[in-house]
Image (cartoon, rainbow, N blue to C red; front, side, top):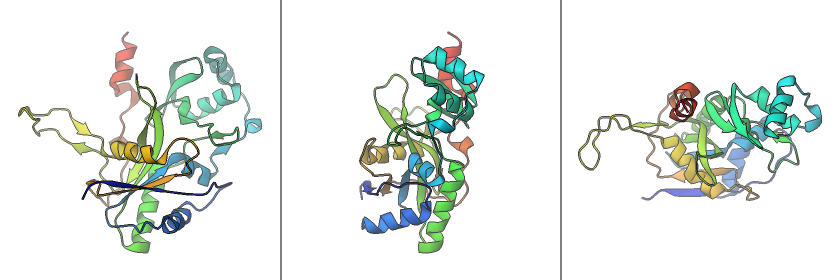
Length: 254
């Protein structure tokens, strides 16, 4: 069978909520019974909302570093402060954006989202790998099904127009396929190639979930051919330290 993607319609939520029970309810209401090997792709912002990871502007106190970034890159002072708090390092930027890294996730403005939030700031979810693992285990306990879980965020890619989906965490599937020592079409042995399975599936799902007012925070991918696993996945398996990134290393040498 061919790969299929089923977007899951939701209603807008206010305040914290029980993420797993809400996902179960939505899957049932959308009439999409889960099957063995399905991969559930869940919006990172939806999870952040469930955790209450939303900041109001009037609750943010400014630091000297935030004022510096605000002035240098023409960014709102309150947003600058949250970027400083959420980032491990700020590489630089342009007017309106700074490039940051946090927990080996590189993103403009520390991945902070202002869309669909009534002027508030939506942060990355806490402990995304733990959340993905918990959801996977609960589905197995409740339905005796092995499913994969991917937490997706949209991301600007270098020198490309528009956003793509990227997996910021996953569970239940092998996130990367090691193709080293296999042959290409000409018989050449591949030496460095890894296929980013979780990222590829995240991008497929994100295309169906949309970026605006669709209210489709979840998508179910069927017949993905992703390899199922019961072991815990860690962030070190899907990302590398920023100082090992070819983009960062290459630009530093200019």
